[in-house]
Image (tube, rainbow, N blue to C red; front, side):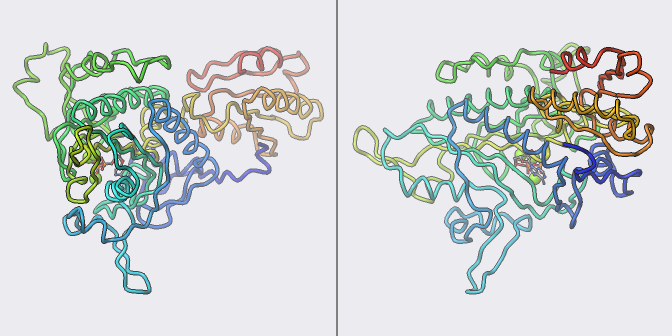
Length: 437
Ligand code: ATP
Ligand code: MG
Ligand code: MG
Ligand code: MG
């Protein structure tokens, strides 16, 4: 992409309402625009990152054996009456009436809809296990939308729903998601710690929240320091094999959010291993048995001919919230520092003299080669001052910058800058491209 043809509305100053760094940087970098409290338009740079996160989430869900569907954002109230949650959900639910006076709602989650799909088609234990997921916009009329995408009212969530014949199967489904989550966050450059969590209004017994430690996190969390360095399973992990040992490695160490915190158990840890911090909830998994299948009549025929309500779990990831979490975890005074896996462009090319033919030719050469190598470069071909170009490139946080000026070119070199460390090297254009690709 050439910057002269792109839409990157960078702001010199962050609007005052932005209280935390990720919100400030997202606004300044022209990633999104607030249209209403907690409701955003996604601008090109923000949308690119959102799509990359979504793609990683999808790959890991698919790898674990979950199957993608897409459920509607607007749901009928009647389904929620069947589960008993229509009244229970309260003011976070945005309720809508259509022209025929039918009650609808903008889905805050989708247990009811997915249970309805299941009961319409699945009849036999032979069709299980099954895990259906979707990546869809949700709406929750939060009391205090704030911190940008961290607590929006409209936000993108991946939500998966598992269906099993018995508790052992449900536990296997839970373990698969647990491991898929570990892999997902790791690929996003994050250390997410699974913590025992309250099951809240969804109900059930087994539940973990995946938490990123950050001073701006909304919840107080407590954990064993060892959890920060545990190995995350690789691509070759066998999702059909026994995942319990991996899950046990994480769950056998102390980790709890404030609602579940047990000070006595925590204080048994050696002092230097006690981490008491703030955290961002980037995912949440639940196993809740027959809470929805029972009242909604989602049953399967068992081998002995009897009919039984299916055992379910639900598994959420805050896809849009993750952008904020990644920035909270990876930035400096100059701006964002994207992990390679989600960077909106692979490298930036900065022309220091857009009116210099040799400089432009070198930039074009770099642009073509990086594009051919699949690096998706962003070429700042504008006539802006070098200082402003450097500030913008640092702000938007691409991992590499290739800076081309007439003086260097005369000596056969360009400047290659690594955003994360600030390290700069004078090298030939060829070796810069070799380094980046
Ligand atoms: P929170 O405690 O932050 O309100 P939650 O426990 O209500 O979140 P869940 O119902 O567990 O959220 O939804 C699954 C995931 O969706 C959460 O782990 C979080 O990452 C994300 N999420 C929930 N609410 C929001 C929101 N208002 N804005 C952005 N992401 C959200
Ligand atoms: Mg909530
Ligand atoms: Mg929560
Ligand atoms: Mg939650």
